[in-house]
Length: 365
Image 1 (cartoon, one colour):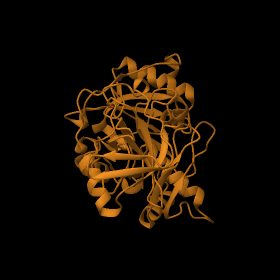
Image 2 (image 1 turned 30 degrees about the horizontal axis):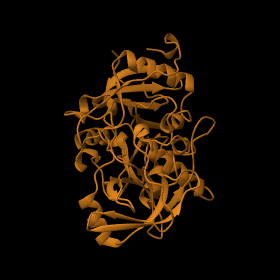
Image 3 (image 1 turned 120 degrees about the horizontal axis):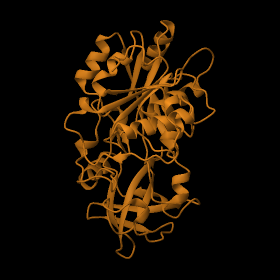
Image 4 (image 1 turned 135 degrees about the vertical axis):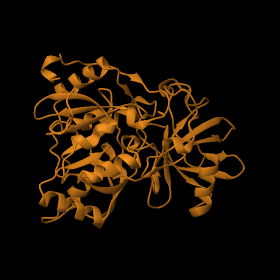
């Protein structure tokens, strides 16, 4: 299907996937070629055929934290803390919610108590937190210091916390529901979901095609806060780490004429932030840092040639990032095409591959 055959559409909304899939390889994959406007309806199992020998596929190996924590406010009020960002000094930025849980849409949640610097929160009998700063953007975004540090804090976070989730889901999630196959260090506040359907058998098939694999670690942040002012400022600064091995893999890919393909918008942000830190002829800067880089229409990627991503609605920060790889009109048409084929969205939904020349090796219907 060519996008020219479909009118561009604003406000197209896909149905939401409400639970993890039993068979990730059966999930839908829309292949979008910005150079031709071609759209192809495939399955995730067909991904190896959309890649070429010499390409490099880069994954985010961040594990997902149990970033939703129940607490009591200064007067005993119920409060939910959602971890948003860990500072180098050990303090955490958190988003606050009032009474209720994930079953209520974030924008409909009761507001939290208005906290001030010095206020204390209790997370059961094991853990406390004290407010050390309140954001000027919203009183719902505060910085706290927990009563424990190091291993003692991590142990308590894993005992007390649950995965962040939203009202489109049917059941409460277990922590293993929100991990990708390559999950390693606990950096992500929400699952880097683009990598979720890439089973080890699929990664082996991709490698057998002559596609190299590499990793970055990126602290994927919250996707929604329920606060209009805060949501408008997403994505927030996030930590990334790029290894010397990944820098070498990108250099080798460039040397052989391959394409660098990011698995998820978090990988795009990490690689492009690393490139912004590089000097001389180096494509990337190995190391770790926090980036406030926001990608979107008009941004020309320095490293990444394409991206495997979930289905994202127009107006989201993830969708805006995709306009660095394809024109908004083509992405609008792709959403309409996805709706016509029954695609579903959100973290357990279907996928899209935005990559020039991606249709060359894809089996045609």
